[in-house]
Length: 308
Image 1: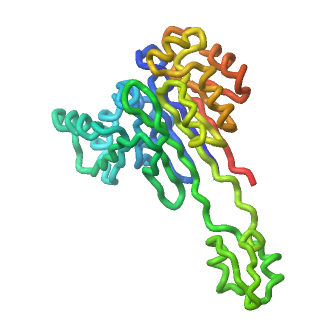
Image 2: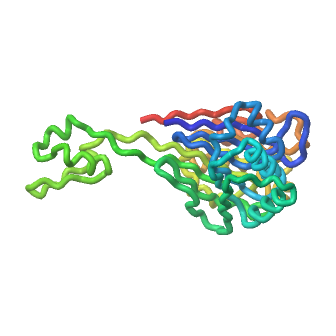
C-alpha cells in the first residue's frame, strides 16, 4: 500500500506566470481523488500526466475562486470526452447551484451524472467510504465555510499466522474467515484465543490530511493526529502574522506548530502569498519548529509506502 500526492497548483488567489492556484491529485490504496480545482487545473493535469478518467471523486474545500473556478471547465471537458461514469463532487452548500448554472447557461452539461454532496456541518463527519478508503471532513476557520479532508486507508483482511494456528488442533480452515475478519476463537474448553495471536501484525494504515485556507486552529490536532502526510496552508511568513489573523490564513510557523503538536510524519506547506519572491523562506521558517517540512511546488510529488 502506498500514498502518492501530486501538487498541481499551490499558490494563492492572484494568478501569475508559472504559478497556479490550489489543486492536488491523490492516489491512496488504489483510489484516485482530485482535491480543489483552481484555474488551470486541467492544464496541470495534462502536464503532469494525471489521467482524467481515473477521477470519480472531487473534493472542494471552499467556494473561493482560487479553489474551485477550474471545476466547471473540467466538468465540461468530461462531456467533450464522452464520459459516462458518474462523478461525485463534495463541497460547501451552494456548489451545486453555482456549478449547474454555469453548465446550463453555457449548454455544456453532458449526459454523465454529476452527484453533489453538499456540506454544512461544523463538526467532523464521515463523508465517503468504500472497502479501501474513508474520508472525513476537517472543519476549518476561514472567511467562508471551509473544510479540509482526512483520507485514511481501511484495513484489509488480516493475514493468518499459520504457525501459531497449528498449535491449536480445534482450529480448522472453516475458522479462517472469522480469524481474517478479526474475531477471537473460543475453544471447547472455554479458552479464548485472541485474534492477535492467530494473525500477523497489520501494516500501518496510511493517512493524508489536507488543510486548506484557515487561520491557526489548534483544535484540529486530534483529528489529524499521527497523519503520515499533512498539507497545511502557509500564506504568510511570521512577519505578516497580524495580516494572517485578519484574513483568516496561517503563517508558516503556525502550520509547523500544528504539524508538531499533531505528531505528523511530514508537513507540506503551500498557498503562498504573491508578495513573497523567495518561497524558500517559508520552509526555512517552518523548520525552526518542525524539521520535516517540504514546500509544495507544481509537479512535485510526495510518496509514502506503508511499513510494518
